[in-house]
Image (cartoon, rainbow over all chains, first blue to last red; front, side, top):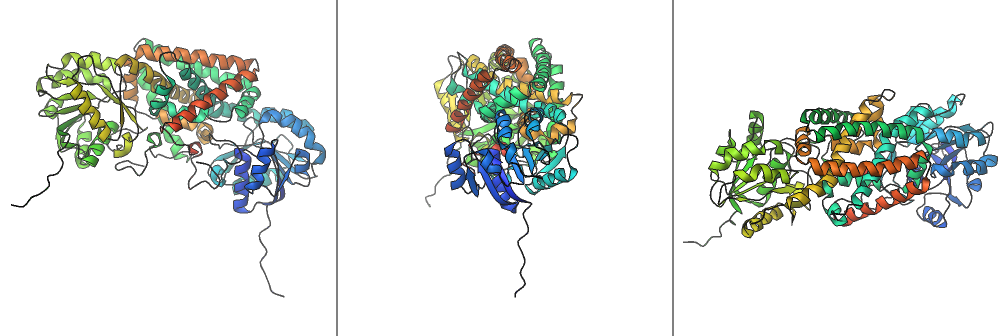
Length: 318
Length: 318
């Protein structure tokens, strides 16, 4: 008999991906990269997505119902738009195994606790989660393993959740490349309203404002977009169904942050109207400091990305 | 006597850069790349910028006054914030040579016609210009030759400008890598209000909204900025003096576009308040189309930049 080294045991024997879009497919790539799952089972609503997931090798088995996909899984990850969590939770509940962890990747967390929580049977660990990562692309072909690298994943376990289950899910996200932070769902929803939800709403909105101008053509807007508008359109290209569900499910925090934003921009508007250069300069200069913090925290690079030049800059600092 | 080929004659014998920040220094790199200027003379207000410009070889001669810098120049490019154009125009006017072209790179054009035009002596061609290109960095060290490649430069000559002077300046910008379009100053100011000025105002504003939240820390805003906020901060890191001058000098168009934006975001706000998912979805889906146009026009790439991953994506379309 020859001695041999066994392959390291995967963190989870069977992971079920419920929904295979940008985040689901990126999770598959990230799990494959580090061998985190013994088997990846998948469910997607559309036949086309199921075929694509199979063709790309994103899943080891693909299922026509979420109930089938979760059978025998020790980790279930909801990756659909949050608007369909409730019926899915109801459907999978009877098929969840004792000791399994159920989590999700949705951009709101209070509504997830409300919609999914009541369906989770005793003995199953329910830990809502949100990886703060994404691109403007969607669908099963848009994923890549590096999406979560260096980003933050927020977990919002409800009171009484087994600490070892939270620790195991945290280890999973760290192995996917993320940092992990735990907070309560209400605080998450407030933080994300300002760092993600309202910025997206603004981006969607100004793109539409530009489209409806009578005296500026769409082609002019597109041609001269490099002056700042371009960056807004990138955010506004994100999945409309996902974002509809975010706003339907984080109403209070989104409206509060939007109200504050409107107040602040009204101050700037008044300063423009009255030619108050001092106020404009002061508020513009203050905003600059936050950018420096984001670069220092590794959440963006100092490269002059706004210029989108090809090739290395000849004289640029980076 | 041996036959020899002469080096191609530069487009301009002597170009004066008045102001050497991001755009001035990028112009120097772009001119050097193609040998567009026989001599580059420079003026900057601060001794430190003058020293840096000399050290980096951005200029062949550096001058302590704008008047000295323009002497003998056949092309004068104003690259300072637009707020100081009027006194500079007054200062350089007596030193401009017959047949010289005076242009600028400011983000507003109506105010430039108003502030500079009256000082330009007969026989000098005054052609306001605006390269729609930039990064979030500023200063003489931030420039690079490729900044203008594939971008648009708008020229807004007043009626009666000599066509051959407009053609020569257009050839200069094309040699710097740009496409060139001509329009009147008022139309420019309206187009840029929506594609650049209001997006910047929004970005400055929401960054400050985030900074003043009582229940969300600055460190949380920074950590979780990858959800969209990050892209706003990049724009909000732009030079505050330049932007103050933009808003002081494009008041009407900026206020009009801001008013339209406020109307449109109010519709979305109301849809959130009343849970109107259909309206949200329709308006979000419409915004997506504009993004596709920008990519098709070569003003951005389809790469999932919003993700800022390092290394090539494993499964991403691009």
